[in-house]
Amino acid sequence: MAKKQLTSRAGPAEHPLSESLEMYLKTIYQIEQKKKAARVTDIAHELGVINSSVTGALRTLSNRGLINYAPYDIVTLTDDGEQLARDILEKYTTLRQFFIKVLGMDEQTAEADACQMEHRVSATLFNRLSRFVQYYESCPFEKVRWNEAIGYFCTRNQDGCDLCEEDRDSLPSQRDSGQAAPPSS
Image (spheres, rainbow, N blue to C red):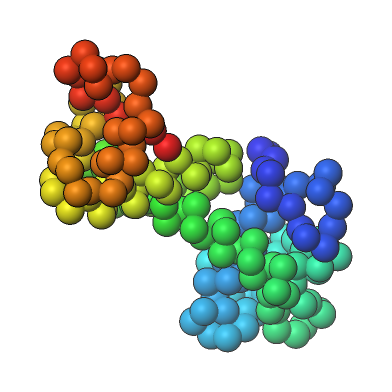
């Protein structure tokens, strides 16, 4: 299973969370948002696994200080666990928005792909995607366009748009050649 950079703040940085453990954290967080606490059966149902698989993962997460867990009791996230779960969910949400709003993918495919990629995205890529989605949604003049040859670019070099001006100022000499260039991140 793919390993990830996210680590428990309570545990050593050299032991990253697996994709599976990240899914447990995210699922517990989502159940907590609905029910205030999770039970083993809730988690098993949401993930489509058997209770004994959940129990093993909960022990690991508890040992890493990410959840509060005791057999036959409710499960809640610690502060560190909640922060990691929010980080994972933020990656999922950003990827999903990018796939739907920028790439024009259907929701079902975007959700499935975002769920797979949320565990593999580097911090650098995530930060750039986040910034691009923000840019895409907030450009007051015209939406960014996708161009197969060069990627994305703003179709207007409009004065007064802080994002356009910031990106235009950081572009290499492409702007002098009359070509539209993608905003830097």
